[in-house]
Length: 237
Image (cartoon, rainbow, N blue to C red):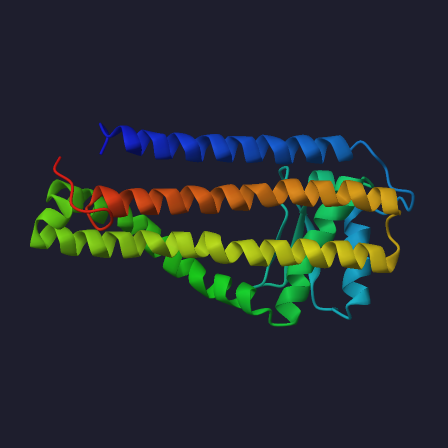
């Protein structure tokens, strides 16, 4: 594996995609963090207002350390906004806060992809953690060239696939949250049309990180399936 050029190509593509998406997200967030909204509502203010508009009264909003560490915890119904978002009056803060509220609204409305993703988390964590060892053992046994190797290859690929499924189902969850965010910001009149454009660019950039994660996971899954002879015929290494 470690001497396979295809392996390093897959890893390299994944790293490039991830780094590019991360830099794009941080750069766009930083750019629109410099523009104060006309309403001068902080991220926390925007979150409270949207939750109120949606008649959601059981979600707690609290600050969390870090940058772009914003998230909604459905287990405790807690909306955690990072320091650059919680008290900021920027376009970026409004967009990110509204996006996280979008997840709270999904939760309140029993949005199916969000429910599935939440239930799938322990499966993906377990599968992803074990898969590496199983895949390496399968490779050492020759993959599909031996009965034991083939069985381990199938198990390993299926285990790794649990993480790919997680990154896949994350896409509609995140895209829908951003769609809800833009709709609520516009409907509530919290941002001007120009400010809405800035907020959308921030959310679009953030979405690239989830796309990069899925593409990287899918490429890695396909690599192992081919490397172990489950796709494209058997390999002699």
